[in-house]
Amino acid sequence: MPNAEEIKALLTGQRAAFEVVSEEVNGVEMLVYKDRMKALREISRLAMNRGQDDIFLVYGDERISYPEFIKRADVIGESLSQYGVKKGDRIAVLSANNPQWCLTFWATVDSAAVLVGLNGWWKSDEIIYGLNQSGSKVLVADRNRFKRIAGDLKELTTLEYIFIVDPTDEDLKIDSRVHSFVELETSFGEPVDDPLERVIVEDDPAVIFYTSGTTGRPKGAVSTHRSMIANLQNSFYAAIAGALASPGKGIMPDSGTSQLSSLLTSPLFHVSGCHSGLVVALASGMKLVIPVGRLDPEKILSIIQDEKINIWTGVPTVVWRVVEEASNYQFDLTSLKSVAYGGSPSGADLMKRVKETFPNVKAMGNGYGLTESSSIATINSGEDLEMHPDSVGRTLPVVELAIVDESGEFVDRGQTGEVWIRGPIIMPGYWENKEATDDIISDGWLHSGDVGYV
Image 1 (cartoon, rainbow, N blue to C red):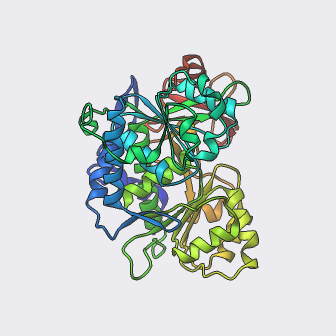
Image 2 (image 1 turned 45 degrees about the vertical axis):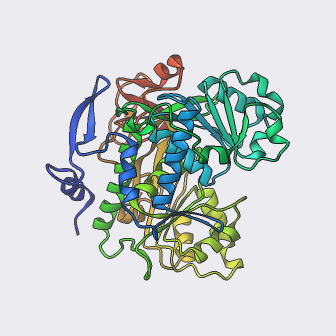
Image 3 (image 1 turned 120 degrees about the vertical axis):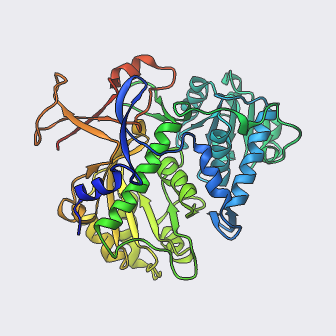
């Protein structure tokens, strides 16, 4: 059985599927995948080639096929153009996970605009700050979150349109800018320009997600088309490398279906939910199941049974809650083959409990990344995870990682210091915040603020 370094050489060498070369990106020489998409919209071709029986989204009783999803997103993109949205304009979403979030995301990045994912747990002053700081022209919101700012709309100086997913008649009377989301799904004329003809280059911004530090206002980390596609390829590499490292433990769909089924429990306004959940599912042909309403262990276990979930990625705290309460219920959990988690520390105890709870889990993984790194930078799986359950694993092929002391000098293996990361996954900076950007990025290296060792 090949080891991790042999697998990496096999997959990333010359003419290999994940061939890695060195290129200059924004003035910095770094490792990149030679063969890659240049814009997220290229994923649409993959999705449209799938059949009507291939379901992309499941949300309660609603089931949306791949072709239907792309067609609906195209209509929304045309509607946004008719409302005056141009390349680079910001479209904000303030909502629970739902199909409208996903459709708005794809319509936005597919038409060269920029999706602003607002934290669904924010209070009114934080929402107003995010909308104004990003200069958002359009807001898509669910009613529960819209209510937090309904009395403060006069403070939203750049916002021209608000589309509510589930409005009441009273909501639509609050302000002339307020409309029903249904209007976006009904193209009312010729677009001002064809959104799909807008040129996108790799380093165009695609997404802004706000990340909070220990002090000050949240900062808008920018993910580009380049960084999100690099994360997508990293995810594919990790899956294939994991299968090669553990023969017989590859994840296959259940009998009677050609699709893998994935459960999304991370918020879409976070890179784990959007970049590593939504985008990876759309590009790979998986069925993505989004729970309706508040999450609890019984609901998650029920969905795993009813939707025959094969893959679940979540944060350790949620995974812990589920495995601790699973014995209280009688669900068939045999479909689940893969569980991965990241975002906070975990260890051998959680791995043991997952295997006890889900008898057919073949693959487990833990990883490390940040909003500023467009999701994952390292991954720990297979034999590595068994031997080193407290580690966050190895760097992915286009990621460089260094440990640096307080004077900015790289330290030797085994010594502790600040984790620095470089590669195409790293954000170009914080939105309209050069000072904060200069504080955290130098020569392409992202200063994570986290302490670690190699």
